[in-house]
Length: 299
Image 1 (cartoon, helix red, strand yellow):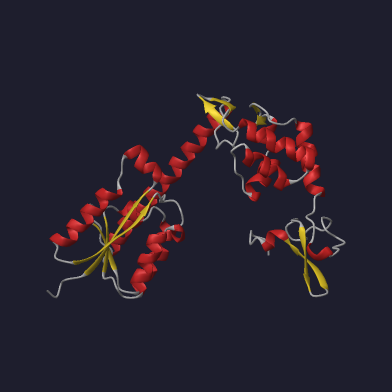
Image 2 (tube, rainbow, N blue to C red):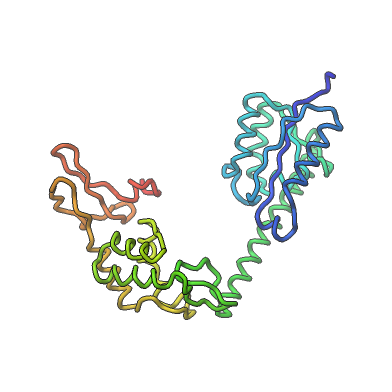
């Protein structure tokens, strides 16, 4: 009939919600499909962002972005979700996305709650609910932060453990499965100063590392046996850690074609402090920031 609309479903659930509250994507998807069918609309299917927290910026939600592209392409008349907090818990993001919907005359509906945005009081209600949801989300993360601080203070290591370690209850112990590889990795670096040889030594004993991962390990003081004042088993002594840092600072990779880069390892970027890398273009030699080269946030 003339009232038939093209309806897109949207579902979202964070990993935390799945674990703690048993909120499921499947449940949302079924409810949305059923609503569209019962109301005689053409259902375009469900755009679902699983494992995405409501706090993360909407630009990080791939399915939501795909939905917005379809809105701009005029493929959608109405967006439905089960509850408003599946859509947003952040007032600023809600308004950015609402602007796109308004520009394309697309409406939304929470099928398990009663909202409308046609009247001023309806819009006020949405604002209040979003503010409450945002405040709740902020408080949850604040509680998590506080709980973690208490656990640190009580001597528990509350972080992802590096390779070579595992948990035994609340204690951190050597992971016997990867211990020989990690010992070989550090010992080889202390002996040779070569990252590649150290990675090879670890690989021979069953632990494959990437160049970036291996570099991070050499910079991680966790392996010296203390983290935030808590003792953990050590792979290297503080003195060896210092020695590794000095070695890394001095190390420069051999160049191709026997070119001589006079300033290798000596120049740092004036903007971010990163190491400058030598480049050449025929007979012109120049240096660029390594952080900038890796597109990691230096201008």
